Length: 571
Image 1 (cartoon, rainbow, N blue to C red):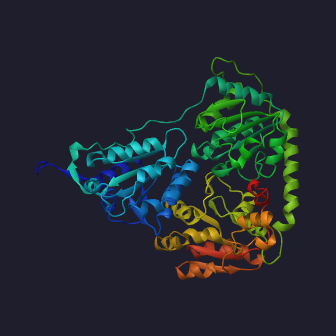
Image 2: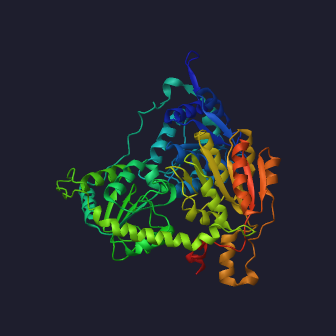
């Protein structure tokens, strides 16, 4: 037994101290008896507690917080259904390479396998969708295990970790000198890797020699905060850049190296293609959309991703910012790497690529002109292209844009251009609907100085929309738009293509819900729009309201995004 004179600390307070050491400023949670001692510790450590209405929202918000801040997010949920409700959010973070910690409760050790309240094998369930999943075995290990979980979040490409903490471990108290409490900045090392020097030099040489290069800047460009390095490379070497995922916004709209609509043309005609921080997954046609005649280079944080699904001519494992900076330096003739002397060239081959950029700009303009009538359409119901065009015009340099939906967000991906890095958020490759409200919650909590603009499909909003009330309760204003076609339209198109018009509406048709009234009912700002001329004024009124808002825009249910119609699963 501990001496009465010894200072004691509970497991929940040890957890809170470890969160504080990592720089966690907020936890997202839904209460449960297994976890409340963590709340008590967070109050003492000055960590905000944001309580939501569904555990999926808590996990998505932790994911979103990590994306916005670069620091790990944290969600705390109770045992059993609390933890299973959070599975989708953890899985989404896993596919999106987002560092977050989910802490789940568990029954007491002395009730193990006895059928205690909400007892489930959480660790076994979480192991396939996390980088680390474990049970905290003892109160004295609580902070130590939290720091261990955070270390694993940043091993290679980032991702989520899970810790299960039994109720008796969390509530028990141990002498402070018996517990290891990690000190901020002292329990994990930098993971930044500059890549193999010889490979860096080889890529520099390839870029100098290329006549028709193209580069894709993926989510890891934002993850590694490589905006400056990427911008310097494309401008110094005169390389056209395409952006996807969180990489959107690396270059501002109007930049001469910013391209969006000519990617397929570029990848079919380039002689050198550099893929930075994005896998050859379904979004890339598993690598098959790249010209077989092009030299292909892939840069990624994760060794396992390089060359997966498609052979590459050169693979570099490392931090996008460090690698791209080194490549620019080498290509500019400023230094050799790996004992290989640099190619001496006054402009890194930039001058000879002017015709290539002009060719791509012409392809870009042709694509814009093809859809221009729909971008300016006065039709009612409103064409989705008109809606997303109005949203794009509405955004400022301080607007964080969030897309949560299927077909409507596919439309927006072709038109909406964030004006700053880190100002685009979408689910990522898991394609999870329902991330919108929790991403808004995280973005506005982390960056209250920023405007948050979110576009929802009506089906997507339905999944987590009740936490609009949480946004009202915590005074987190945002401009929300529901592109309402009373359908799960991306799936509807597929059913129509496969089974014909007579079966196109099986299992995918929703009611005509006035989401503007829903927003007002919960204390927010709401408006309905049926005339496209009213979209801009409604957006501005939502901004000026200073409240969480929903503009319910009735869009044409028979208009489908090209990306929806081109999906291979429907062919």
